[in-house]
Image (tube, rainbow, N blue to C red; front, side, top):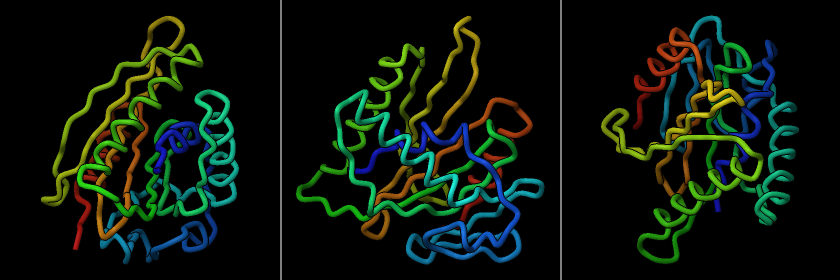
Length: 202
């Protein structure tokens, strides 16, 4: 079961890296400012001034996310099949992170049921930590492919908005593919949305 909670918990703390970006992904290639995943058939631009996230930091935060899931919800999730695709950021609050995991449905509708469960788990995880959130579920087309979209607004102790999170997910080529966008400022949101919505799928 794919758990988006992992990426939610890790995104705020990611750091960036100026070394070879191809060493920071489990699948796909980066040439200049273009990332391409052969398995997904996906191409996206890395915007100017944004840096690829360092693999070691991603793994460390993923491990912390797994621990938090287990403590809050009691699920011991095996993330060994999770592939980290491209992740890049402007700063710790403005991030795009993507990943994939093999998913073999055993019956019709299993993937959709899994996604609903993930949404419930996300809400429960925030609630267990005393964090107020609002959520909205919808669908959106990216390059004529329909994605499920789960939007989360995160509030601070004074009910001020401290973060927006957009989780896009879709079943592609036998894989559970997810792209997560974190943002708070309008300028960076526009840039994130520009490159994501201009993504190309084969």
